[in-house]
Length: 140
Figure (tube, rainbow, N blue to C red):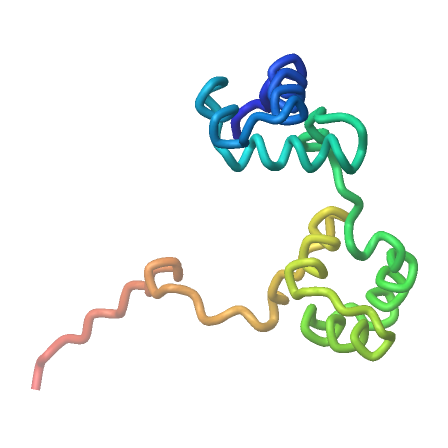
């Protein structure tokens, strides 16, 4: 992702538009896009500043407010699926995506691995070799 244009440039562009120049001529003069000139002018009129908004940062998880309920529910029924939890959350009036539920548990360090009893049969190459057979004499 690129960086935001400097505040100095933004202020000069907004001042030129405020002085009566058209957005297209200001864009050509300062070598920026017409859309940028329009957006900066709109932001200046709305907030009094053409400064860029903060980029990046951390957003809280969508389910951070439901942390206690989710962990308690998982303790009650350890083999519950993510889809079942998603349905239960929807019943509680919380609409989130499957990814949001998965991401919450990943952040908590909880994974939903298959149980060892449900593993499929191993490869024949991993089995111990068959024992030697007794040699049978062919005297008849």
